[in-house]
Length: 172
Image 1 (cartoon, rainbow, N blue to C red):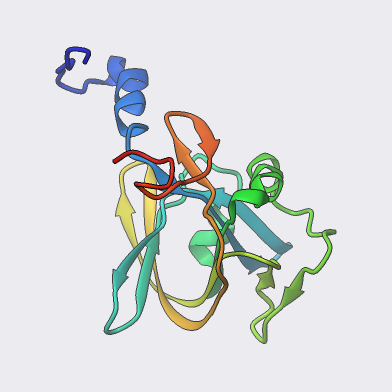
Image 2: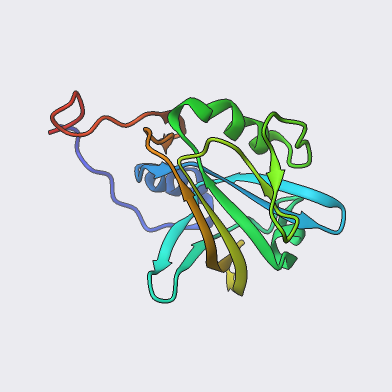
């Protein structure tokens, strides 16, 4: 076992802090919305459940993103939890966010693009936007949910991969 490194995060330690935060594995989502310029999407791993009653989720887009204003101003959005086999879909929206010429894309009554075949989809109405340093915290009230069985796409330490439950080839 390697020895742990300890440091106090300072501006010059951005890479080390990012590496430390990357030790926490997350699922991968694509968030979509309707903006004044048309549909927009972004790959995000800053998604979490916030409350069951009322049903709320939270995610945090970076202020430096060219798509930030579209998401911070959107009244409705959808969070799509990607399956392991949807790496290409996540990569697509990580690189650019306005190309929805993909098979099976639909939209809901609010005009929010809906991506097909995701493990889960949460169609939300914006509840609040809060300051969060170089990100904003967007809280959404879940209005509709879709889900299916499958293995999730995972992001950890700068890499994408799958998940195996303990006892099935994963860590015990």
